[in-house]
Image 1 (tube, rainbow, N blue to C red):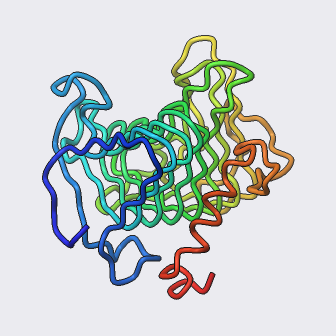
Image 2 (cartoon, rainbow, N blue to C red):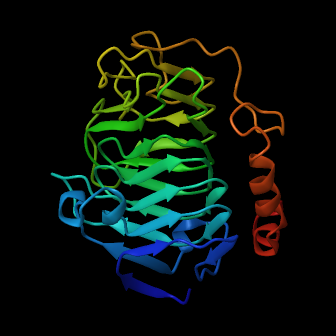
Length: 274
């Protein structure tokens, strides 16, 4: 996509593999993106969550590189920036901006690398098995970062945040106003591992939503002012980090596809020395 701001809602429903590249002078850094897809639409006005999205990816084997996607509606309603529905969906060095329900990681196996994701309330939510590696998660208002909708003990849904930074967005300075997550589904499952957690994170860490939920909420080797776990609620002790080796539980073979894709993309190799 050529540089510019595209004011529209885009739905991609294609039967084959698809890669979408946004123009950038430095493909490894989200801040250098020069393509933005933007809308200001609520789910109630659009008819449902998916329809309110600035970008809805509906299919398998999609990858999106160096595009910023935003829903600028703000506080007061559900307003999705990106809905991802399908297996092998990946986003690299993308910016995803919203307030409530920013990223609907809805279903399937998904992979987010070096992305910037901004919001306030349940702004990463859904039922996907999603890996967030080297991402920046920025809070622009009070609320919970995640609302994972895992429905049963056998459901593979899992949000893994690995070597990522959880911080305040520009203009948001309230200490302790954000939680790492709350359960949308009864068996919600989330881990933050080897992440930097700033003081926006409440000392309790996690909060409630679904009545009767028995979530699996884990933290492992995190650092920063918000990383102390002595006052945490609803936390399960993690004994090791989740891994991305090809036998890893979260991907069951799926993630090797995305790791290869990222390492084989020549511009990333040049810029990052992968």
